[in-house]
Image 1 (spheres, rainbow over the protein chains, first blue to last red):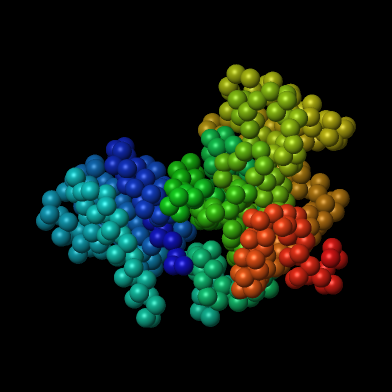
Image 2 (cartoon, one colour; image 1 turned 135 degrees about the horizontal axis):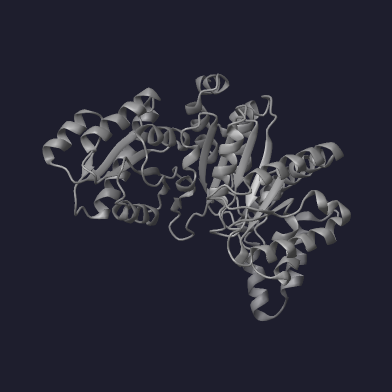
Length: 139
Length: 318
């Protein structure tokens, strides 16, 4: 039996809009993932530290406050400081395609915009985690 | 092994990776456990249990925040249920543990129950061993929200705290078997709600019946986990209980009993698995089941036959 996929879901910064992330959390639970939900108003440090302690495969961050260009890179830096950038950082929120490209170059793997069907996100996580685990085995 | 070296040096990532390795029963986990078991271990283990929504995680948050300020290294294992349908889980205990998020002496690990029905996860005891070997002074184990009979926690810790709420029931509930019998310390959370005083006095009556005059030492503690009210008293009660059981030898007895049960249950698991396997291979069950259908034998006689076939002369009950 292969290991369970473990995902940390967090809301970063001053942002109380958690309806979306709860929908994602329930969908991932139903897809057989173990979802660790940290709740609202997490700092980048708190998110990276929780991911380290929980040894998750991926971190999903929802930001609807407009602070995504600041917070995503800070989360990645906090991950770098803990040497855990092998964990996949992905997220969702309201942002432009151009911003997604910039964030991608700064460590965030994939970003999903409004209206993304949950099966797309689950398929993405399954795929990216499978690839990550394969590459780890080769090493 | 590089991971174990990092672990010894106190690297939290290595601790986390080793827990995953062991939780997933990956190849070589037994070797790691065997090596880790040789490390010095000194942690005192506190179990927190009670019904869903009683405030277990919130209480762990305020309790651990307080204990961490005394400089102790604390490991928290928080267990939530896995879905029996999809195998997925929503582990939400961290949501209530915000005061612990930035404490570098605290390490929290969420575990999904993964098919276990006793309130713990299958690998909980091993994870406790790992945290202990990492150098924790205290390990707090928070069970899934339980009912009256999910009592595995008594096999995993030294002091059991049972958390109830004013809505938990009347005097009859406090007289029932199961959950009410495993508490070393009772805690009535949400103490500001109506009915709390009454539940506290029912509990104290019951404790008095069990412990006699000694019950003065361990009365039920009222708390409000959100405001922190009563958490000092709970923490005092836990250290009093610790001194008490260490002093009178119960601590060692308990640990001994737990180890014995753990080993026996692991032997039992293997015997049952082997037996299932042998019966499948023999095709014994096919012939028995046709005899059962035709009324030639009954289930008890069939069980006797199977038992004799495999165990005759080998086991005391044969």
